[in-house]
Length: 159
Image (cartoon, rainbow, N blue to C red; front, side, top):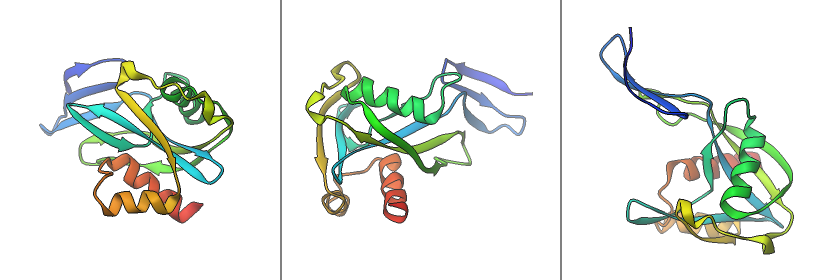
């Protein structure tokens, strides 16, 4: 029998029957790649005193599809609407610790002039970059977020 340590609307943290710490996502999550005319939006996100460069992301709600969740996150974090969205691939963050259900989706943005940052959640900036510029950021260690790095790899092999 599992021993629950913490639970909220998104995750349950518990010690399993073998005595190992585990995290189980309840509904899953989504990494959003906002695209406009061949460029991709990266946000600057302030987390724990550090500003990280990453793709927007978040948990999906109960009963929500990954596409709907990604479009909601896009609207919440950046005030963008998607004219076409599709699943790029699945991510497993840490199979030894976390049971998750994460998808990377591409959202084609209709009008980037509608940008309005969700500063209440730590979003402090957003800019569009070419794929090659993003690769340069990785080489310069400017992108460290594992969700973003994995999603860029999916973009490379599937675009």
